[in-house]
Image 1 (tube, one colour):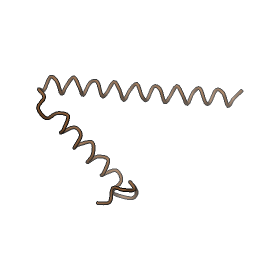
Image 2 (cartoon, helix red, strand yellow):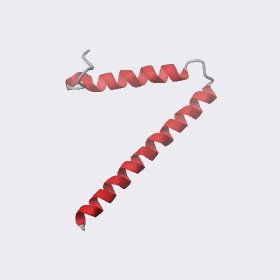
Image 3 (cartoon, helix red, strand yellow):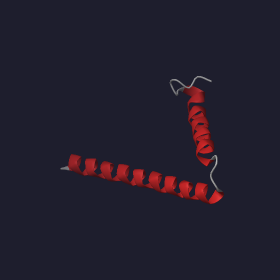
Image 4 (cartoon, one colour):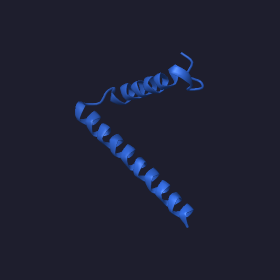
Length: 66
């Protein structure tokens, strides 16, 4: 699998494989409660990043309208 360019049929698979490997490394040696807390924190991080992106896009759209 060629993951260098992230193109074609394997691009998404490489990202998925990287996420699985990262999750396994993060979970190793931690309790279920610790992993659950980390999972909730990463969800919150993702949601907050999406909010920042949306706010930036709204701000850019508003400045283009004026």
